[in-house]
Length: 220
View 1: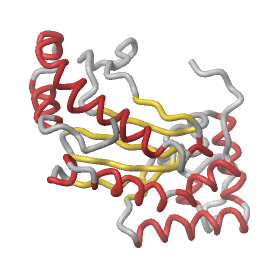
View 2 (view 1 turned 180 degrees about the horizontal axis):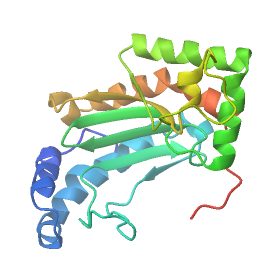
View 3 (view 1 turned 30 degrees about the vertical axis):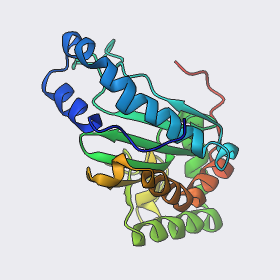
């Protein structure tokens, strides 16, 4: 089945999960999750897989939270995310549905230590650093939010007057665009919305692919 939109109760399902993040709620509503959330997410990624195959294979994230080292022990994620990527950090096309509505994104959502070193090395150079600045400026002009965890101080060895100090502080760097819940979320046109967004972040993902790449470190 092709993508026809997220189901009628996709947002209601997550609103309920926010209020009652428990196994009884999940078990009572899991069929809504499968029909209105996960099934459409898989179909959406399948529709986009060919155009963005250079980034990797499509994947829908598990609905269960990793609570082993978390203070918050609630068992379920309160959104459903999907991604096409070659490996974490080296560029990604991301999409998410949840109580906030629809989100699309791209960039470096995670940077291992070897990736962070390559990221900072590239940002430090005038050619690649300025190229990244231009890409981010273009995205801001198109309504994207530039986000990602940053250091409170500057990285070791970076002068206080570095022209791209704000970028060098980033430990992650990505762009996010959010659409509040609306009728389009439940219609085939939602596919066009995500496709256009992913095309807009292609330059950022290509920069990440060329200058950050996939980590050589084993994932934990």
